[in-house]
Image 1 (spheres, rainbow, N blue to C red):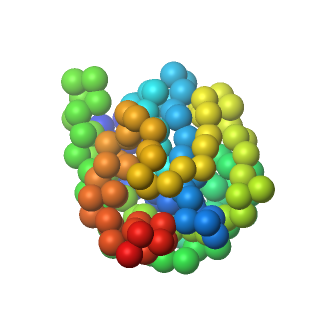
Image 2 (cartoon, rainbow, N blue to C red):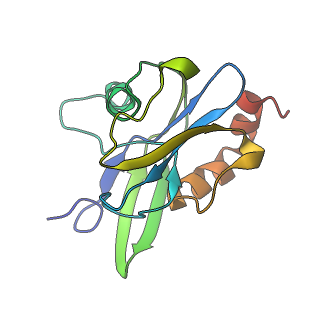
Length: 149
């Protein structure tokens, strides 16, 4: 059985940012489960035995090789997608996490082609469907962090 296809997947997306209001984003490699070649903030499926907060911090360490400070837990959202003809269903428990720019690196080169720090007005394309949904749902919160309010 496949998570998100045969049963609802639970993910913990995170939006890493630094003191300059930049966001850390990465390009998904061809080895990723879905949406290869799109730009994503980061996240992972919730692992058994971990709280959502523990899962987020574990994923940040795995993907970006750094620690972070959770600054805000956001309301959950549901993401329905069509992935190469297959319908998927995910429940997302998102967080804003502050990290130090100099500590972040590509810690998963097999699944991440590239990482970069960007301003909201300069996001690379194409964006992962979850990124588009988050930017729409939490526009005010993103702009507060970016200093655009």
